[in-house]
Image 1 (cartoon, helix red, strand yellow):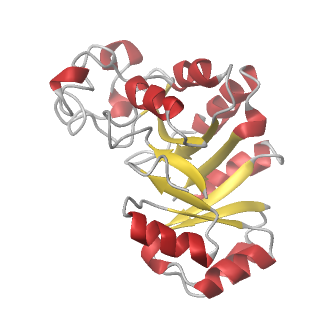
Image 2 (cartoon, rainbow, N blue to C red):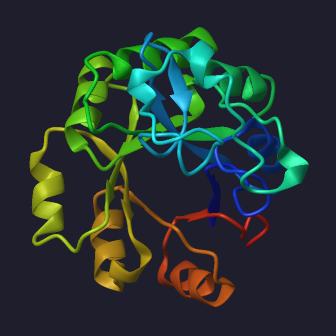
Length: 237
């Protein structure tokens, strides 16, 4: 299976930090999955939540209300372990610099809410092309309109549709959205053999999230699922 380190090696280091990404590079993972949001001053930074309360020593302050300089004053590692005290929020550019000279692939998940910025997608694409890694990046999101925008900006972009509900007529939807879909990313407990077969019939890969149980991972591997988004199973094969 194609192994994607969820928010980096987040089972072993604080999620979405350079420490987690470096551990993912040291593992047998094929890809790093990360989340991107836009700061108040328009810089793409890597964080899952819309605010910094859960993963930093700051309060419930929203990413879109803070500049990069302000965000860099907070500790994003100590919550996980004292070993990681001093970890700072990374920019997407810093991550691209980290992986530029290796073969690691990226799954960039576009996040938004409670606001939807106008130019996050353009800024992400500009950075990806600046570092010439477009051939090993896929873009995913629960917000398929954001993915539609990326596809309109770059028809070569690999688009992954993320969904966490069991959709009616999933492939009727996929066939009609006007995007050349590269992959679908369903929550693992919705996956069936028929879903995998219908996706493969269309040349679409199935990548499932977020799974850390080896027995379940083997079940889906045997079913033909292509990729595993995982916090811990970075050496799974």
